[in-house]
Amino acid sequence: MKKVLVACGNGVATSTVVGRKIQEACEEAGIAVNISQCKLMEVESKADNFDLVVSTGKFEGNIKVPIVNGISILTGIGSDDTIQKIINYLK
Amino acid sequence: MNVFFSIFDAIQKAGPTVILPIIITIFGLVFRLNLAKAFRSGLIVGIGFAGINLVINLLKGSLGDASQAMVKNWGISLDIIDVGWGAIAAVTWASPIIPILIFVIFAVNIILLIINKTNTLDVDIWNYHHMAIVGVMVYFVTHNLILAVLSTIIMALVALKFSDWTAPYVEKFFGLPGVSLPTMSALSSIVIAAPLNALIDRIPGLNKIDFSLKDAKKTLGFFGEPMMIGLILGGVIGFLAEYSISDIMRIAVEMAAVLVLIPKMTALFVEGLMPISEAAKKFAQEKFKGKKLFIGLDAAVIVGHSAVITTALIVIPLTILLAAVLPGNRVLPFADLAVVTFRVAMIVAIARGNLFRSILIGLIQMSAILYAGTLTSPVLTKLAGSVGLDVANSGLITSFAATSLTVSFLVFEAFIHKPYLWVPALLIVFFGTWVYVEKKKKVKPAIE
Image (cartoon, rainbow over all chains, first blue to last red; front, top):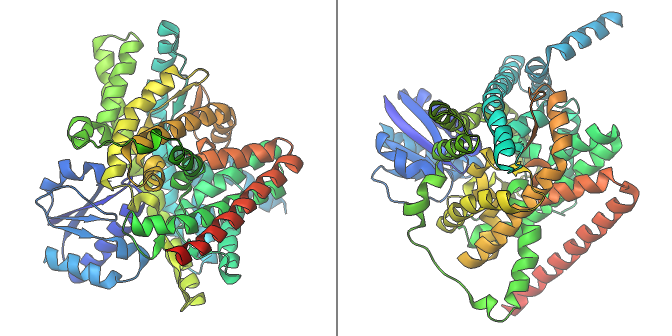
């Protein structure tokens, strides 16, 4: 089971949307995944427990875990590439 | 006909956890989802409301008593509890007139796009609550549907235009091209920030001041974690309420729980509304194929910027202090301390990252929010009670959203006091600003 942390400004709105999309894509690709959400400000203290962080905004902190910017999943422009990138990390 | 009425009556009596799934299902069907998907969406939203109600009960029960004890013991009269934007958004979505207002906002956007008066396509249906709440509150006070719709149209116009105007900041300062942010909780701050920043520019001495804080995150970082805010504030309030040690510890952990649980419940609303947003997006993008558009996103995408976080981390503790010392303020800042980043994000962009200005303007903005929250909390509390949020027995509620936001406050007040006078006045100021800003924008590239 891979663990993904999806972060956005309030840990509510855009992270829910992106989290659901990642969940669906992973189900299709046959990857078991567990998605958690948080606020961007919490990323640094939480990231270590996850395999991948996806943020919907610019993240400027320092973490050891790979991080993908998921804003294209919200706009729909370049969304497929980003999803593919996330899946490659989780394979 | 009688059967129809008794069904309607039964649904009405059952409350928002039943009304919401029905409204959202109908919504989904209108946006051409199939029945199963639409009903699933509706049910998730209903569950979200039930969840929010549970958490608000914990919050009101625990914090309500403590804040009243605090008033008695210390004379600190902060008896209006900030229950957070999520609970107020839930109230907005549970209003009987919400379907009308949502379509009005969507229609305003589509019409403005057709007549080329905006570049923003806002199909983030969930966030429509920031615009709709003003209509819901105007309707609650005046019982006049036309006024409610008009006030919502003005909110939508302001949100879309502010979103257009701030798109260059979003691109240049935050590095996000092609998007704009029609989120009123962030945009509202520019009516204070833009004039104040221009004023500071013209004050010799003051216009040179700036400083930077590299260690803010290290020393104040815990203010960025809702559970820590809850724990500390809960403990302090328990102490001021002169509780026993065990009760102080209990209220501290309960308040930490509230701040962690509210967003989880609110996220259910977003999840439920997602298929509807998707359908609206598909409809709009097909309609406007080939047109250059800003995709309207939640302002959540910019609040991770380090200057925004630094500003918020300093403004959060100072807001609590402001609440205690500002004469006439009765708002006890709590749940929405977690979203101060949204209130200051545009301020930071307009001040171009100048920390001194960001904090100064941020504090003035937060004061305005506290006062507007104090003034409008009686209406908001009654409204919340009327749609079934269980707040009836103890004290008043507010948030840093809804009519606490400067723009929403002004529109709401204009519509409930002499609308024939204030609404035209508001429109003149708004359209004046519109002409001024877009003229200035056209001149600029020629100079550069």
